[in-house]
Image (tube, rainbow, N blue to C red; front, side, top):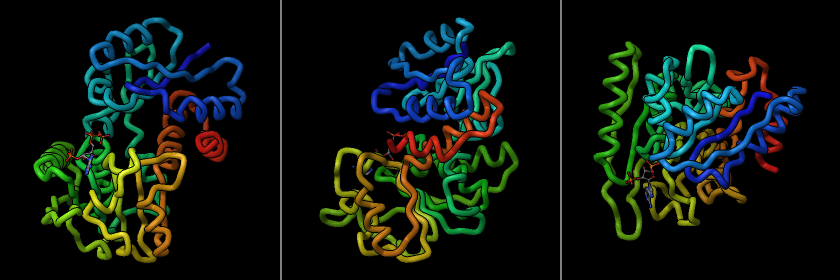
Length: 284
Ligand code: ATR
């Protein structure tokens, strides 16, 4: 009876159990496999993972905020992408120990309408999600610019990504951009110049106005742009609402979640993931 789970803190809001259990049922694995949620604070993370792995009951787990760095650190082996990004969101428990993967990068790329190669891309945010997005887009050949409220963090991501690119001998074009803040807004940048804009900041999670916190203009989007907002909730985010109104193509965080979940499921089961079923369940 292989079990799976998402491990995070908190995880109560996660759509992964609904999405993955629907997928397992669709694949005819619903009798044997199951996917749950394990909430554990940082100080208990390693012991919990080792316990789960040693139990013999679990095939693997997704790992989410704030455990992605710790997940890579405790693994016995890690995929190239996980090592490149320096974080893991997928663990597999096997005879050879704990294997770490990162499907966040592949999930973001799969959610895009086409390859970002050659595109000018803007990544907003320099947390873990920002770093993964910069790496994914940069390695796929986009020219990436990164903005963060605290510019020093964006610089750190740039330095880190550039150093890892050298280490792994991949070519990544990334630079930090700073914007002079304005009264009541984060300032403005040349928004129309980007073909791809990805928001990885937490802005919008608590209903804040994204245009007061991000250097974007509500009326500054254009057709032909692709706009991704990792934030997701019941309603389309105000950021994506404004982008769609201008004729830009929009992708929400749930679609990225579905795509990363599909890649994780394929790692654990070796089966092709039923994307449409997962999408319907995640949105359910
Ligand atoms: P994650 O690993 O999920 O990306 P994180 O490390 O907490 O999470 O990062 C959250 C991101 O949201 C950061 O880029 C943060 O900016 P700072 O580095 O300046 O803190 C960004 N963020 C959170 N609240 C914000 C706000 N009100 N305005 C602008 N950016 C915000």
